[in-house]
Image (tube, rainbow, N blue to C red; front, side):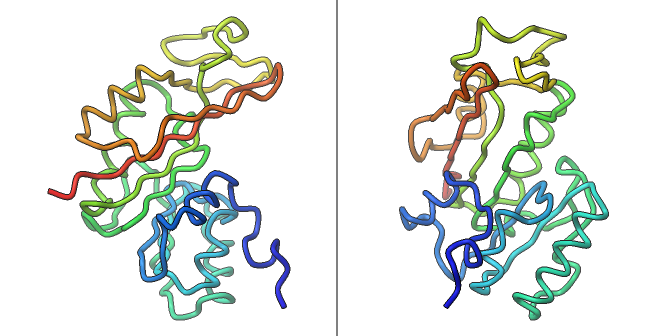
Length: 204
């Protein structure tokens, strides 16, 4: 019998929460936009979901292809591509779920953030689920130092593009999306804040 770690890997606990709530189900197509080493898709590969992923790192893409070959060899290597999130080559409306885990806070500026969001939204099917976890200024307003625009230095010395509630709500409205649940933020004591943003794409 598999251990929980073998079954789910190092999946983000808030993405795991979406599984527990039944919002991600077998038969769905999953697109991990900025997959890294694949921590969030081990379960989906093992359970034979149709998984796709992009990352700008060749090493990350090679790692994902190897994982897929071991856990779900029916998936073609072309499902896993070395591409930036803002310029993906996947078809429009190809995914039931788009995952953006700790990616959007690497945006260079407002335009880059906007481009990444538009591209992920383009690949999401009507009625599909968008899951994002990203750095924010929420609860850390007095502890971060502005560098330029929305780029800040956090107490943990990370330089990131940080969102706030107003920006996330503005993008939600711009996309014509529905908040699946309230925006949730975890403040890591004296270090940083991470926000979970889950949307449903309009089915029309």
